[in-house]
Length: 208
View 1 (tube, one colour):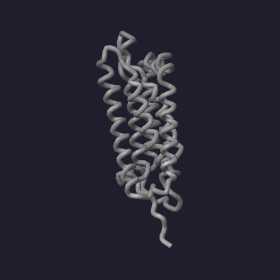
View 2 (cartoon, one colour):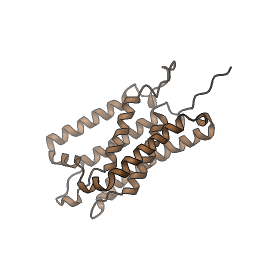
View 3 (spheres, one colour):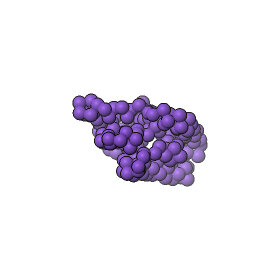
View 4 (tube, helix red, strand yellow):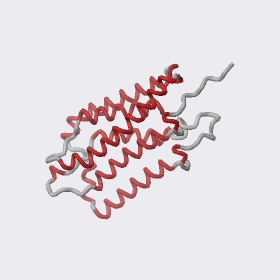
């Protein structure tokens, strides 16, 4: 009896590579916004997007699932994500976050106020972001256990979903860091944040 083939990792990269890249992208936006100088006018200060807090939960899932969903039983010889030494992504995220917070505590403690979402952000967005996170992740889990996950059509779809998710995260960074800063008053961009959260959580669910 022939063995059932395992789904190949998206884009031909070692398992965990895409999730690791997206975890770095999520953390990078968080770091940049915290380090961005605060304007004299508080209304023009770039807020930490509320959906970013929900996507940080996906980074935590990556930490927990790292090593379980990446190396299958009996296949411990699989390459680490992006062929880097084991634990590189976790080290980058932990060290980067620690460095950013240490710098802010010593030099710009007032920037830490951005960590508290405004009442307007919470009132408007949390239901949408939480729903997008849960629905996207659950749909990803359901698709992951379907028998057609071994087919070329689904694996092509998953590769495209990886490209789309990473591209959206890159565009989100451009919007949050550069475009939103140039606006008279930064905006939350609820539909965009909801769609981004759903797409990224779907990919994490399908690979966790």
